[in-house]
Image (cartoon, rainbow, N blue to C red):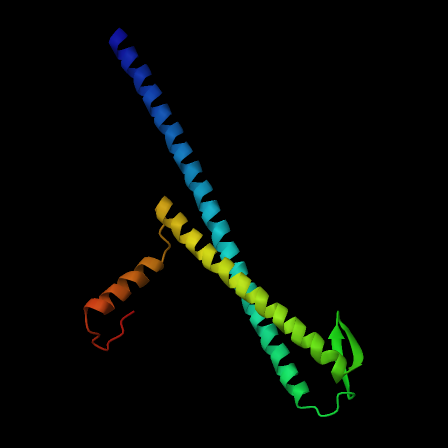
Amino acid sequence: TINTNYFIQTNLRCSSSTTVMADQKKKNQEIILGQFNKLRNEQRMIAQKMSELKLEESEHKLVIDALKEVNDPKRKCYQLVGGVLIERTVDQVRPNLENNSAKISTLISTMDKTLEQKVKDLSEFKEKHGIKVKGEDSLDKADDKKDTKQSSGVLVN
């Protein structure tokens, strides 16, 4: 009876420590997943903001090109500033637009470098923690298959 009790007590201790270790591993995985999602969201926000800025830059360039064709520098034009439409002359508006466009271009190039670094950080994080994103592996394998085999022209879902 003594040996049986010892076995039961030892077995209970082992199973409880195994449960604790499993809980800790699960918590660590949740923390890692949270960090990964945070990095991915940061990357997406940077890319989205860059897209918005590129659109704004192209709008600035369109207006600048249109104002270059205006022969009279004293001609009236309207500029939207902070939701308020202000009457100005072409001479007053064009330098402001060119300055803003240059600043936007600088900001885009800075954000592009930041995005590249974020992509690199995310890739390193994935490799370090062995994270595999659903769908990415199948794309990588499909690219590898394309490189090794000729396509037969049949698309299968």
